[in-house]
Amino acid sequence: MFSLLFFTYLKLRPNTIATRWTKETTSQQERSTAFEPKVVKPKTVTTEPRIIGTRLKLLAGLALMATIFQIILGGWVSSNYAAVVCTALPICEGEWGRYLDFKTAFTPVHFGFDNYEFGVLDYAARMTIHVSHRFGAIVVTLLVGVLGLSLLKHRQSALRKVGVLLLGLLVIQLVLGVSNVVFHLPLLVAVMHNLGAAMLLLSLIQTNYIIWNIRYPQAEKPTLIIIESKIPTGRLKASGDKESSL
Image (tube, rainbow, N blue to C red; front, side, top):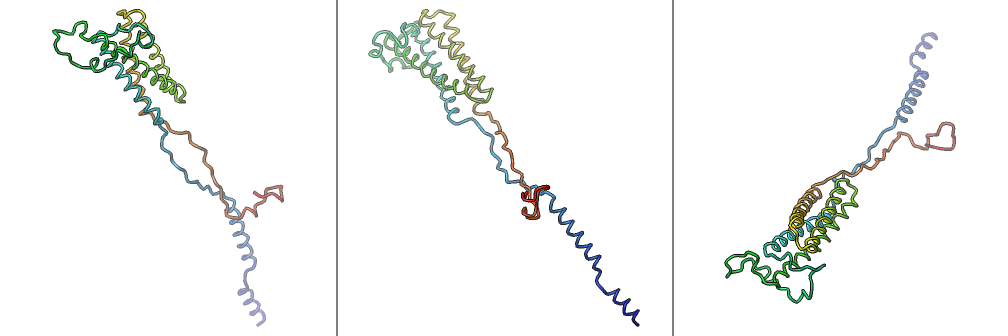
């Protein structure tokens, strides 16, 4: 009878060794998983590709329009034989302001003449055309010069090269224009002046195309990676240092 009761006790008593082993195994698993780092990616803000500033675009557009208008003025000077009217620099000789006649100078058609060979306008009208062309040259020089210098300061190498090209063509065109006045319009200089105007116009068209279409991405900023742990940081101790905590 006593043996039967003892055998029943052994069968029904809780297995403390197995329970203790199970608890230790679970604790070890929790510690091992607690030290597994969990990478949490922060929210990244995607930025649009950086483009050229609006001021530079407007400046390039204004320089192009001013150059087109200046070329039209140059053609009007040639067609009315007004290229050698003013022989002094920088604007014209004498009291040129008193003789300005814009109405007659820019009237497209003049009736009562058999032909327009050697021009039909008087001195005042031709001088007005010539003076207008010189003021146009000053405006173009300022706009293209500022545009070229702005491009030289840009960090994009393609834009810096365009700036060098614009400034070089502008200087050449100014030298040719002054040579026309000083040497009284030699044929070779006049032809080169027309060619320089065409080259400057093409360069400005290229510049506007590049400025209005270029896009380049910004350099990516370094991202912060956050590592989370399942156990409080206060319980983590650095190895060999009892006071410091991770």
